[in-house]
Image (tube, rainbow, N blue to C red; front, top):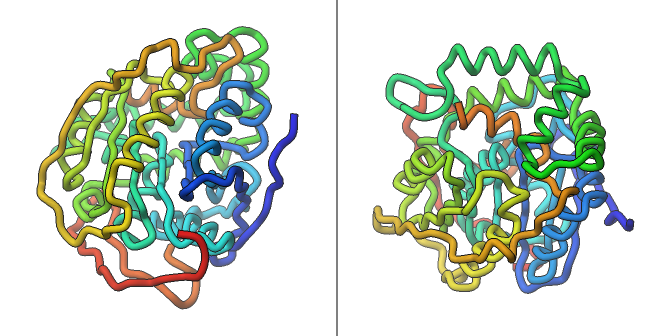
Length: 350
């Protein structure tokens, strides 16, 4: 099976691996929770999903810092620094504006980018990306702090072991067979080392997007499965004028078709040439009308690469030099923030 060429660019001192596929009418960046640019192409359901996105977009994918084929710095940096990986990739390929689709933890840098660079964000699509992964006194969703620490302990002690990844594989794919499990175990081992995985999930749990969501002003689609309905409707209420659509299942493998179709319909039906300065604090919610038969389903399918860790949790920077952009804060303290709307244009594709 052919794997698209892998390229590198730099976000500050960090080398970021990326791929570009397709020649569609607009640019789309897809960011999963945890991934590797090679292995999804070796799974027929992930490949079918990517091929479908690439049929109507120029599909852009990258391995986030600390994962996959990108550099693995000991310190992942702030959300602003991680968001800057998107900026670096867009600049490298000459993309002026893009649709950002973030799944699970991948929605964190996408939301920050949309809040910071609205003029470069055609639309934002969040798939099961809550404001926080851990409960606080003023945030009722996610895991209790003690349960979150137990998850981190499990990652530290068991990451890389076959039985641990087998459990994740069956969470990612309810129909997983031996072929899928073998593929998944190998994929996870190449996604991150035990230390890198622990660092990634520790940062994910410390991130708070509530102020970031309040600063997003671009067209936003919130997609959610049944298990995360309440916390994702909370996201839709926080993002001005967001649209919420319920997916028929919780895993990516069961909703690939829905995600691609809803994203295309939303973007093509939105007003991409207008950059909103303010929008009304309303959102609409509906259920995806897609027949289940349209979803890619097979025994060798795949839910999000590494999202089973996130599923269990739910069920129980700017540039290094020059051209910096002020960003909304995304911290555990959820401090207040503002987003400037100065225009910044680059040459290339819109």
